Every structure is written in structure tokens, then in C-alpha cells.
Image: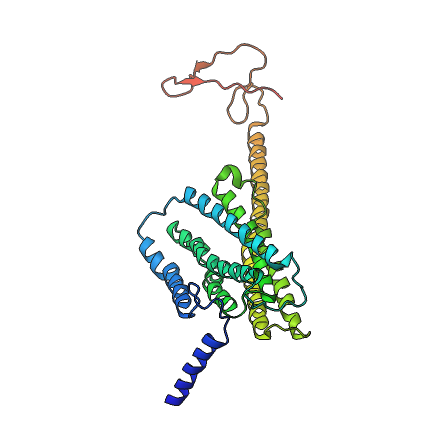
Length: 339
């Protein structure tokens, strides 16, 4: 047992020290996966347990200005990362079918590796998406999809930076930063208030864009299993399986958030129309009944069957003394128009 454990430890150190990219080993958080893992687990604990418990008896924070600034920062940061990906390769000579990693220390290769590391750092900044939900007590937004997506991404990207900072699998970051430019632009505009929100009809299409992104990523990654390419196929499988997992998670979210919501909206609209028609019919029936009660057969003495006096065309006093009533009671006349 001791030798087995010793072998695992030696294998781990050999993997991290000898089989990883030596250019990045001294970069912040890149010497070991455990600090990143600890940060991810702390994030999950804080947003699912600690944060909601602290906010349970507190009023939600008004973070409107903070959200505007934060989302503006993410738009700028994502735009810069997208530019890095374009200039570093994907619009500057990278091959969509096969792109090996350049492990040299040339300025171009180091530029790409640095961009991958900054993309890794960006995944930590996105934790604030959830932290702001907690502070604003928007607990329904802290979904399974949201926490898994944000909690797992830093760890996933860490392995990419550690072993393959460049080449084929950076296609994911290239697409993802573009999607984030669109997504955080939407959130920034939504934070401006109701006067802008009424024009933001395209939220669900951001989810569609994300699903298209994942389809493109797993097709791009899995193609290397069918062609000869000097790129680690294990990382193609790693990226491709992430894309498949996230596709189904986002697809499930889309069905829950938009398809079922639309069905409930249509059902509510149909019920409203049915109820309005029933109310209208009931009102018409009540009017008809009232008209039937008033329109009665006339008697020869000028009174109607319900005791009302009809004016046959001469001026009548509004009240009179009834000699037949006890104490000669004063009566009030009611005038009914002849029909």
C-alpha cells in the first residue's frame, strides 16, 4: 500500500514537473492545481451555503452602479482577450483543422501563452456574477447550471494553461470571449434600469449563442480523433467532453427558462380571454334580466304591474298622500318612460 501511494506521488510530481509546459511553471497559481481547486471549492461553499445564510435576515443590497461598472469591466476585459486570441492565432494563421502547440520562447508563442493565462485569470473574476446574486438575494438565479459552470471553469482552464497554452484547444477561449462580450453588454444595459430594459428582447438568444458555441467547440475538438495531428488527443477529449456537458446543461436551462415560461404565458393569456368572455356574457345576462323586470304589462289606471306610475303625458306631482295607507302615508311617484 505504501509503495502504491509512493508511486502515485512520484507520478504526480513527474507529470507536474517534467511533462508540463516549463514556460508557465513559475507563473501565479500555475505551480500546483491545489490552490485553484481550493478557490473553486471555497466559491461553491460561499455562494451556496455561507452567503445565503449571512443574507437570510438582511435586506438585499442595491448594487445598480456597481453592476454597471462590473459589467463594463467584463466587456472591456473580454474584448481584450478576444483581440489576443485573434492576433495570437485564430485570425492570424491558425489552422482550424489542426494546430499544434508552439512550446518555443519566441515572442509569438509567449504572447499566446500569456493570453491563455489571462483567460484563466478571467474565470476567477466571473465569480462576482454569483457573489452579486447572493448580495442582492437573487437566489433563484444561483442555479445548478450557474454554479457548475463558474465553479468548474478555472480548474478546467488551469490544465490547459499548464500543459497546452496555445494551439488547437484555444479555439474554445476564442469563441467564449466573443460570447462574453455580447453577454456582459446585455447585463450592463440591463443594469441601467427599466428605461433600457424594455428594449432588451434578446436575452434568450444569448443562451442560443452559448449552445452554438459548445457545438462548434466539440466538433472542432473531436475531429482530431479522426485525423493525424501533433496535438495531445487527451486534451481534445477533455475540452470536447466539457463542451458536450455544458451544451446539455444550457439546453436544459433554455427549456426550463424559456419554453416552459412561454407555455405558461400562453395558458395564462387563454385563461384571461376565457374569463373575460364569461364576465361579458354574465354582464349581458344581468342587463337583459333587469330590462325584462322593468318592461312589464301596463294597467288601465296608469300604474305598472310592479306598482310604478307611468306618466301618460300630463304633469304629475312627485309625491302624494295615499288615503288607503295607514296614517295617510306620503308616497313618492316614480316615472317610467313609455316604450
